[in-house]
Length: 82
Image (cartoon, rainbow, N blue to C red):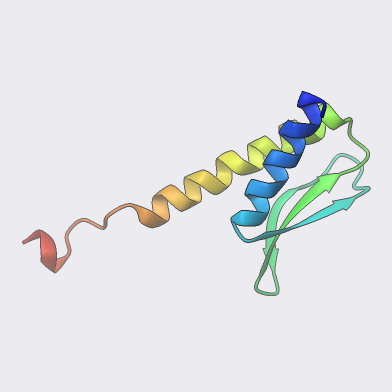
């Protein structure tokens, strides 16, 4: 399989594994992560080239990883810290 397609599919798998539904739509330059109705979505803009869509997905993954890291970070000042 083409390495570019592997990169694309790998990014989408990781986004899905993080609990996001993936939608591929014609968005005229938009897209990215959003949440509404209690559901998380990643919108990929089909009007972009595959390289741009990979960049969009990898940027979304960076954001997902930041959120996951902050959610798992220890909270300071709790009773267990005394």
